[in-house]
Image 1 (cartoon, rainbow, N blue to C red):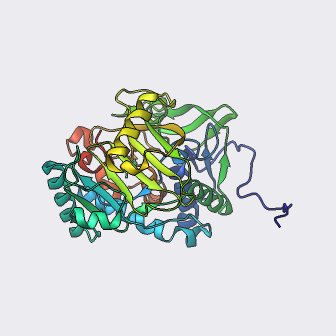
Image 2 (tube, rainbow, N blue to C red):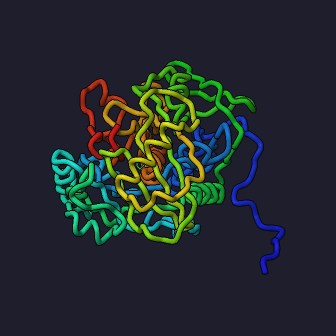
Length: 404
Ligand code: PYC
């Protein structure tokens, strides 16, 4: 039988807060932890602190529906997310931590001609970037997901789907814990329960941060928060074109495995996948009003249940186990904001809307390179804050999960 084992090493250690660090990363989600990991591993910067006002993975990294994919609409977006999928493919080996990435395929259903047109558009952009996507018809969809109602006389008939075989799901907590353990092993200090209350700026450059545990002096600060992106950036005097909305999700009781692809319907504002435990995970688009609330609502539950049943009527007896919400920082073009800001030494990795978790590895890799050299690498050059003043938006609305 199982006997408790004593003397296991802690996956990451606790440290006293030092009075200075070479870099301070605000936000202990997958983005902040991955940045710290790659900074220490690839750039030799080890005097790095990751601060989280709660516990690591308590924000968007622990609240998302763990879907990975790279079937975006813009070439910049496809290249970026494809790098993330590739990093995820090797993450378990890199971190020596089982992140349970299951590349089970991802279907985005089209219920009308304009959606189908967008799916064709995405397919062509994906293929040009070397990403595996194609448009398939109802018969092929039915073979992949026998429980889907593909008959022509439903209220929202399925005309076709964007099929993306490399997409899938991952165990999101494992990704957070794996990066935390890896960063710790490279000397990074992870400080939980450490809230940033101010950012010190002198003569246009960052000099430190104030926290509930005391001040830290540092020449480099990264805002890697979600939900608090604007509040943290405001502390440095940098305003962000971001509005924060809750996004709700839910899981059912576990049932035997029957759904081995991810199914998304933009028209019905719903996505569904089945975990290795057998639970169905459902998510919707963001709530229709800006808010910092993370409470669930009956309206969401009713809406999602109705929409799931439009797709898979056979699920009508399943019970929901629980629901929750996370905060999504939406930008005007549905792409993130990554890179330097007008305040020297103050960097951002924010504006992750409903698509941040899947970008954790590539963001960590790219932000680590940015923090180490002061210059964003090519893969994130399109996502700079200055695009909003220069009018170079990267419009991803047509591929950003479900309709917003
Ligand atoms: O972008 O794939 C996505 C997604 C799934 C859930 C929320 N966003």
